[in-house]
Picture: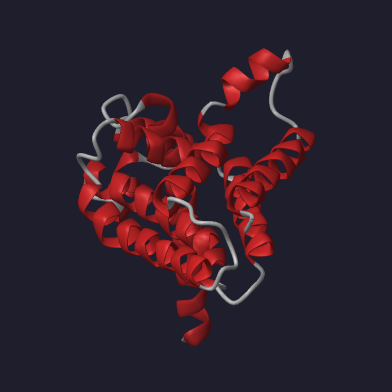
Length: 209
């Protein structure tokens, strides 16, 4: 009995993963309004009726996609929680984690960006409840470092905004970057160069005098 339950749960998880994966890319490419349940089902390789069994409405599917995106993003942002580490090492790890998200989950980054650019009409409450407390916690880390003389005085809020913008642009604006670089897409070397440059910039910005 337990084996059957486990197998059933695995099949369900696999199917939900396929649905969410297809929906993530479509929402990123076409936006919320331009994405239909029928198209998601087609891309996931199932019937529309089967998809509706798991996600009865488009808003419920869209929220599930954004939940998955935010879960992954926030997990990777946990590096600043290590306030006891060397600030330079902690900040470089944070930059690396954010760039890995942009490289590994570009569609997820873009669907989140599109939601925010559109005014966060569907997901504003969740952003306030989950992102804002994390931002405040990270600001407290900077404030402790500054109080201990481990970094220079900086506007931690805007430094974090700048970090988000610099790292997420490698997903959200990768097409523009690839055009400028005259190549089909960004390479692993591009991300390595970005990690090194952004890390150096941030460490220099907070270096104690």
